Length: 136
Image (cartoon, rainbow, N blue to C red; front, side, top):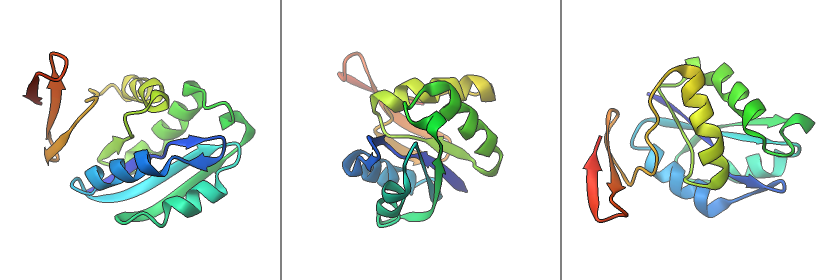
């Protein structure tokens, strides 16, 4: 299965920690393609390619993505979605803004804050302020 992962980029720089952790989790789902979006993202894309488990890196560089607005980013992700079984992102503020829009445009469910991947259709996530773990 193919997985598209939205890289976390701040001011043209890759947030390596958040992105690398998300890649590690996503490798349980299949081959990971990292999508770097920004006004300038070439250096972030090159850095993302060094993360263990990354099969491919896509770079969408345009002024429209410079402010990291959810609408153009979600439209781009949806245009790529047909090639991927899962679309993931780190649990960051940008991703929490973009991914619900992606899910709505694709008319699919979103699973946020997953802490474990059981298989391609089963995940664990904390509920009740982290006092219990829910399997979805």
